[in-house]
Image (cartoon, rainbow, N blue to C red):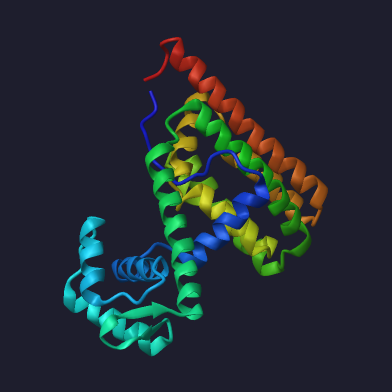
Length: 274
């Protein structure tokens, strides 16, 4: 039976939503410890109509089970004053400015996206038939447009990169070596040739640094499929700059992978798996 490889992947979403999430996630990333401290302090100040002092901030953070040292609170409050996030009202404490509210909104977005990513890590794996097919279905939507644009926009250098990757994959396949590394390189070269950074980011998001490719190589090899046959037809269409044919070949390629997944699980259920 297949082993489990965990990847980040969202619940079913429209393609444009996936792309938007990818781009925003790459811009904001994950909160650092310092940014988390910053978020918690600004959040408390935002929720108070009266100035809040450092001692009260420390007590409130303790109540929230997120203690921060007095020295760290002091340094961050001084930075807030310098950046215009807060106004100091003598011994009474500080209040938040509009610039501080803007910074809090930025950190809130970053925090939400970080939690969203963590949920992907915990809940999605490519070890199930349904998840594999869902991922391949999303790939079909992304890569059919990606390859269509590549056929239109690819330069001679782009085509040379795609061709060289295909040749290396073919050599490994003929020598009975694992070629997953070149499988993802082939598709990434097409993504680069599309000249569309949103589609390229969506592609990387789904593939997650190649974790998906070895699983599909194992499945396709087990059921007797050959990746390089599909890749050759895609390359030929790209070299002709035939966007319609390139799109058809990519759709056929992904649908063949979906069929391979179904066949693999059928064999496994019949007791024929390794």
